[in-house]
Picture 1: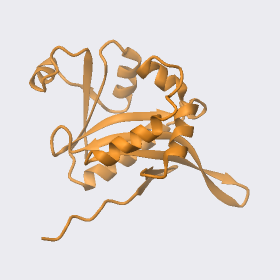
Picture 2: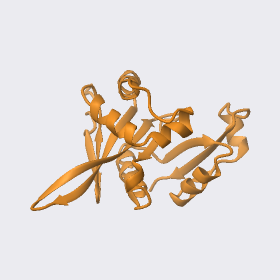
Picture 3: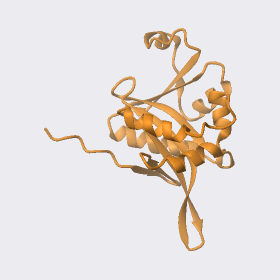
Picture 4: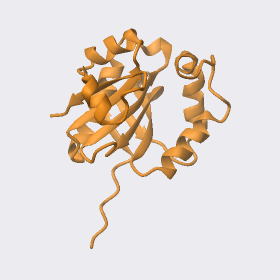
Length: 184
C-alpha cells in the first residue's frame, strides 16, 4: 500500500500566501498573535495571548491528525521586489467531525489589515485546498450571542445550522451557534 502524499505546506489565493506552520515556527506565530490581542480578549477574556500561546497551538496541531494552523502573508510591493507581510492566522481541522467536513477554528487578521477582503481571500484559499482533498463542507462555531461574528460568517457564505443539527451533534445544550458552508 502506497502512503498518501503529504499535502503542500503552502497554498495561495490572489494576494495571500497561506503557509502551514510546524515546529520552529512558534516565534512568527506568537508575533501575529500579539498584534491581534483583541482576538484573544474575545476568546479568552485576556487582552493578550499567553506567552506560550503559539507553542501550544503548534504543539496541539502536531499532536492531532488533520489539525493545522497557518500564517497568512500578504504580497506587498517593496520597491523592485515583492515581500510577504504576515497579516493573520488561519486554523482548521480536516475531516472533523466527518470525513467530508473541515472545521474552521480560527480566522484572525491583525487590526490594521481588517476590512480589506483578506478574510474572504484566506477562506477562498482554504476552500479550494480542502475541496481538492475531498471536503464538501466547512463548519465553524461561535458564541450563540455573538451577532457581530454571525453577520461576518453570513457575509462569508456560511449559513446557520438548525438546532436539530446541534442536538444531533451532541451540542444541544451548548451556547454555540454552528455555521456551515458547502464547497464547490
